Image 1 (cartoon, protein in one colour):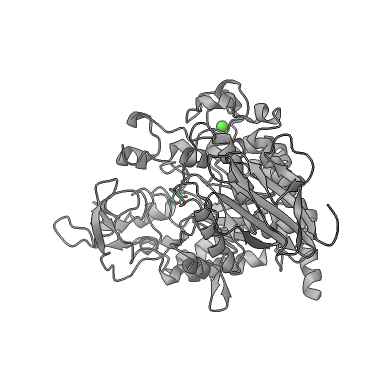
Image 2 (cartoon, helix red, strand yellow):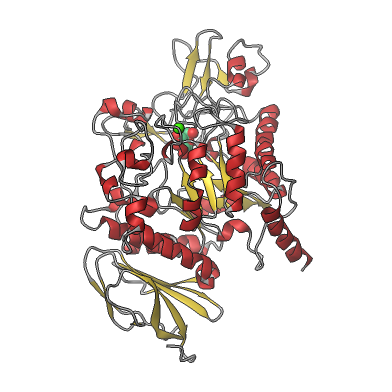
Length: 575
Ligand code: GLC
Ligand code: CA
């Protein structure tokens, strides 16, 4: 009971205290039912370069975000994760950080950031930052590290001798192409980089590095930040013996041998860092979202904690984004696997590294319906959804067609097999004004022609739009207890085309029926066995002309159609 009161008080303290320099909280903020805030929150991933440009330089910025907070609040967003906006040479568009405790002038100032925090808080929106465990080669730590072998920060990075005659220390490859080792002429050694050569890996085995990096999180928490998304958190450590990775048959998009990253990824020590970060996060009621990339659910489970030590609250699994073709059977399998763990899942259907779903699954004819059927799924499951900006509009990828237009270096290096990630990072489409209302200048990436119809203004005016559908489903998510906390109960497990399930709690249930095929389907659902009436009061649906309760014993759903309905107990005579 005391614990419960402490949690409620912590929740209240978030709404009452000033966002800047907030005092550490000793317990995770929770609602009256004891749910920590991140379990019921809807997260929104925002790529700051592309969200809203306030000063016409073609690049989004913090003041642009602040100006759009009402939009996010009205959409039903509770927390915004901003991808890196720290000072950076922008080789990897912010994921090469040259100062962890400042804002890049292209995005604004720390004062702008504080204002964003304050304004967001007034609207009940929390701000989550990105925690990048490698630096830029322009970070002062690295500049010192490479100045001489005896420099104070030499051991803050991973420096090794080569094997002679131009051979690097071992066969490890960068995820972004070619050797993971970069030769340094001045000090005659190689340094290690899992990503671009301009993103040297920190040596986390050096306790000074760990201390400095943990302090970075405290610094932002004290400013009022509500958590971090841990970038590439399975690449923190490497095997100190530098054992060669096993080589697989074939070549990757960069022409390198394919490789199994056994010795430089997913080392057990990565989990220890996550646990330490969690210890600090808990003091501030903060959340940790992991860019974890498990191959399966058992690997995913380890990120939630191990050996009695809590790890991340929201490790991402990518199990959804790895579903290559839209398939009810495949999604059902993934949902069941995650649900069986009993942990609190996190769901996303795309991000700044993953093609947008309309472009993965779309057929050019039903793209909006596909955007809706996916929203009908990931926003109604038990767990926390993370929307990627623009998903709520049904935005499509705008992929470059010529190598010379590509901004993302992996697209230039891997062209044409690997076109890079520009396509999923294009400007947010606000209106049908020039540049989709994103900027009065030339945007850093081009907007697709579809912005004329797919934009906030046009979709707000259209009751059938993807945006209005998102708004309605997100509103339900905040109000229907069954959608917030209900158990996941699969229905019709053998239906390969239509995904159906119940979310059920106490006397309340919501039924979700999603036609994941391009054909009209006749659907039969039997809720008598679970003890419910077989009729649903429509909460949100794509059914046209149907207003009264839907008889679940037999009804038709159009291609990619959605029915989300409230179901009463059989005996209640409610319907
Ligand atoms: C993560 C980011 C990606 C970035 C990489 C290197 O995977 O999501 O955008 O390029 O880390 O920091
Ligand atoms: Ca700008």
